[in-house]
Length: 319
Image (cartoon, rainbow, N blue to C red; front, side, top):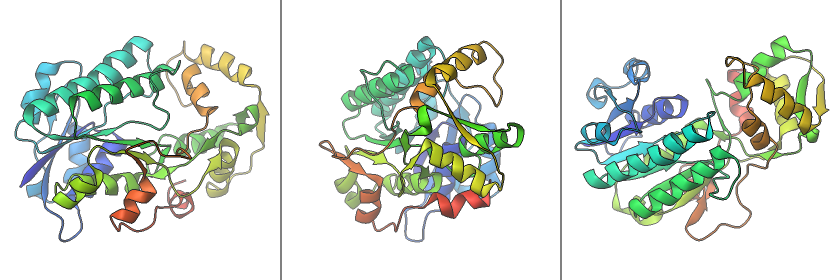
């Protein structure tokens, strides 16, 4: 039975592990190992539902310390790399999101494991935003190290326990209004966490047909619908059954507020300047696919996985 290491123990990693341990009948069984700095919580969540023989003991690692990776990756067939940060200093983004992901790729190459790396739509080595720039640099490093890697670039990922819709739903409880910036016109293509997990389950099977179709691909993972930021705030209010005015503020006002909030301990109101700039930019699948890029919708079609999941099918269950 092959071994799959989930390198990252958060919202997405837990859902991917759950999808693999409950794979459809006829799929090859795989043993799952959760590895991160503190993998115990995610492992205990999975242990409540996963078949015991499919869940290996968790192993701690630190992606900034290459010597910790090889022992964790021993005898591994597939590594799913979820190395990343939502917020941090430029130095932290370089150390973790770029060089940490590079360390994982080098270790995967050394043990002969297939690498599936989770990046982000908008990854760009030329970006002035550290998050986007280091996502792009990590992709560049991975492509040069693991020549058969697969990279998945999600848009905004939603589902129970997500950080976006849940956060704004909580804010709507406490704020008299929901703010958007510059009209809230930036576009997003929310993708269901279960659909990302389903894709990774497929890609981790290791069968020749899957390898032939998807090896070396970059998967731009958007959901079936595109919404503006303002429309997503309307979705929050629709499904949490609250009534709040949605007001537009100049981006400069938001950046000033973010600069102040960055100096305080993190809380539900915290947003960084870089995060605000990201929210003011489109985050959707490219109109024209570059060479070796495919959409998640195309992957689902080619692999007969069914339709992508709409926010309207999932948000009412948890907001």
